[in-house]
Amino acid sequence: MRFLMMTTDDRSADNPPDEAMMAQMAEFIEEMSKSGVLLATGGLDPRATRITSSGGKITVTDGPYTEAKEVVVGFALIETRTKEEAIELSKRFWKIVGDGEGVIQQVFGPGDVPPGQ
Image (cartoon, rainbow, N blue to C red; front, side):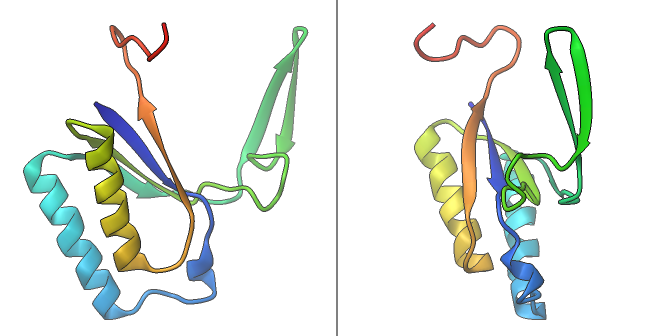
């Protein structure tokens, strides 16, 4: 099962990470990489372009979301056996980083059947 873990606010702008937190995060990322759980990770520029298609008309505007406070600033694509395992990895992430908010969503690929289908 693949999951996308997203950081949806950027409280680190007010409290930049210190060396100890960066070291803990590096160890966590290395552990997940070596075990094959971590497929990809990265930070995202909160400034983005929004593309909307409606009735054949395509509109391009600034900002990824309608509400300026809504933004995804980082992500990790992971592969785990269960959703519970993904949640536990997310909890470990937040214990290292501190305050913030995030979202975990299952990722479906070719051949996957989403629940209820």
